Length: 448
Image 1 (cartoon, rainbow, N blue to C red):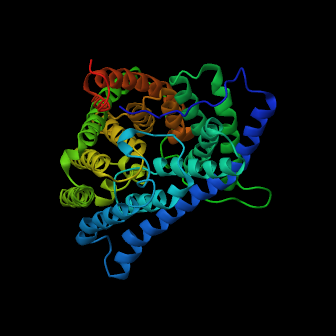
Image 2: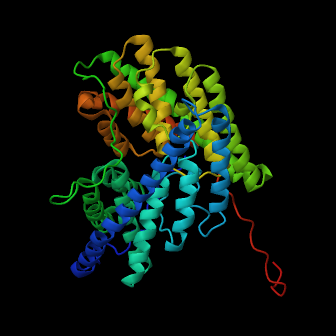
Image 3: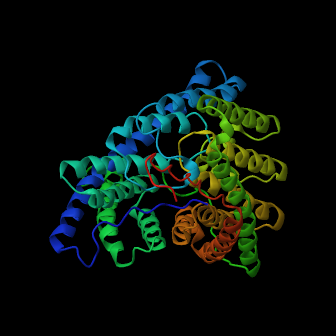
């Protein structure tokens, strides 16, 4: 399973003089505001387009909800937009089947990345916003690195800072960015060089966050809040809750690993020789059909579409096993299709939705607290999709909010179970990277 790819560390911590590091921190601080501004602009555009397509336009046409031809057709229209975006420089951004990639993105790729993100996120594809936001933050940083004539390694450090500001924009604070970057750096074995990467990134995320909290009399900009409103207080931990956490960690990891490895095998197999238009348009049509089928079975197509975080309040109050099963299967299959067919977005939030849906069965069957289900499911979904345990636990604490603080120990148990299960399965199921054939020797090369 692909994990977040950490960039090269730049100058080694032991050899970097104070002036050089201070200069990188200063540029990182300068990058924070524009990177966050680009991120909030994209989130705002996606929100407005999505609301117009799925609410205002049907209402203007006299429908209470999106009619069936919207459910079937809008994902296909989004696929056309993504197809056009992928003709621009940068191929619309990173392939989501690769995981959360934090490599520098050239500044010239911004239009393609932004357009592909709108076509994916606003039109119903089951992917999250984190991938495009990280890419856009990185591209802004690359632009500033060019202005300040930074070298390749320093550009990579600054690109990480731009990505950190973008993550801060999405999650409403620098803590998730710090957790992701710290754990990804440790996983890559950067050791003492982590500091050179992380200090500009933390500063950039903190400065960028002022876009949202405001400065002085300016109240800032409203943004996505990483929490589920209305969760009951979880203040009575039970031994059985730990068992639930283990089971959810194992089951959700099996499901998510199968989804991700299937998508990766399909992508690395050349997508079975299908052309890009056939894949995208066919994928959009299939997602629409799945959502339409879920509607017919009693679920809401709007809960099947999109990345999933907006549907969590509805998911956590679902009491019908049938509807919950329909949502889980529809979301998981649509997620697999969107990972495989060429849409552009992030893989984390749909994985969290799937894991929380699995945990919700324990709420219905065993009267487990929905707050526990959200907290454990968030940690498990994050870990199963990225294998970043610290980031997953922090995400769980943020999504559960103050009502779920005492559920964090269960989230830790679930995260560990998910990591062990995902690691075990990946060692056996992960497709090998394609191996390029050896280059043919020159015609005049000696034999043997």
